[in-house]
Every structure is written in C-alpha cells, then in structure tokens.
Length: 234
Image (cartoon, rainbow, N blue to C red; front, side):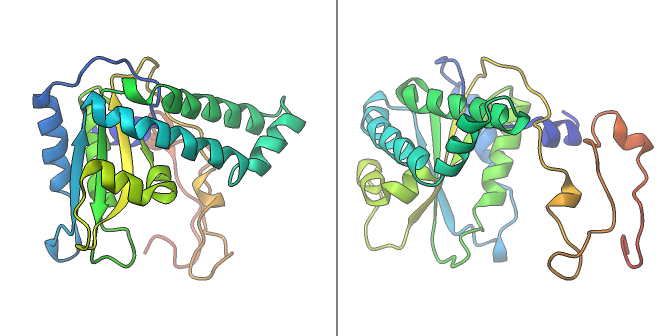
C-alpha cells in the first residue's frame, strides 16, 4: 500500500466483524510496530494481546462503565451542544462518533483482538505511540481496522492491571488500548479540522503561514502549492 494512502485512510474503525484475526497477520502487525523509533532504542514499553473470551468478559463491563462516565463528564458539553443543534455538521459528526464508540462498548466482548500498550521510565508518556501508530498502519495494510482509546487506563488502571496480570511494583502503566478487527464499514479519509487551524509557527497563536483547505491526498496534492511566508519551509 502506498504510504500516503495508509496515512490518510487509517481512521478509527470501531465497528468490526467477530471474525478472528489469523496469528500470521497479528505477527506482521506486531513486528511492524516494534520497528518504530524510540528514545535510545530503549523500547521502554510492552504490548499485551488479548483475544481470550474470559479476559474480554472481565474487561467489557469496565469499559462500558468508563464510557458511560465519559459521556456525562468530559463529553457532556458536546452532548448538550449536539442535542441543542442536531442539524449542524458538527453535531452530526459527533453523533456518528458517539454511536460508533458506544457500539464498541456494547460489543466489547465480540471484538476479536485488543492490543494493550504499557510504558515505564517515560515521564512524557509518549514513547510508545510511534509503535502504536505503526501497528495501526500495518493493520490497515492487512485490511484490519483499529481504534485507539485510553479510557480504560484512565478510569480503571488498577483493575485492568489486575485482570491482565501486570506485575505490581515494576513501574508499568497502561498507556492505551487498540481494538482490532475486520471493519464492517468502508475506509476513507476522515474529516478533520484543517492543518492550518490547529498549528502555529514560532509563537503560540501565530499563523503557520499556509492553508490546506482540503485533504492533499489523493487528488489535490499534485496541484497544491502552499502560500509561503518569510522563513516558512526552510
């Protein structure tokens, strides 16, 4: 698969079929993940694959409880905004995301594979994510969809560690969980706030110096010429 196709079309795919993912495919995904760069090549993280029905059965209620709390706390303003203005594009996008997220919660035990990421000796908490992203890109190349979440580690860190048998006292903390399965939907470029609206240059709040009004892949990129500013692109 061409790199930019993978980058642009690897979106959160939460609705997946219960079909198992062959271990040969799992091996290719995981092997690609561990090739990701890390500080000093220390690989100060570990992955734990979960496909056992009994383990998923213990984690599912924890995930549903965490998601229920999320809708009434962190996402409460967006829930209220969507209910107040259901016809807006932003509200429709949020409702679609909420429905797919709730589907994952309701069907947690039927998802064929979860990848849990654990890190230690990393005060920033970010060293594992190049490997996680590599796993998701490799999965995309295999036709496997993934969805990244940290809600279990935020809401039920100790309980999850207990279920998964993570050794206490060694400094491991859950960084994320990725659900994997063969999507029931279609791949595509996810709508996002344009790059120039979420990026600055040199000083916080200063314009980045170019505009990207539409995705540069697949068609627009060949003809796109950014508006340059002094110092940009050097």
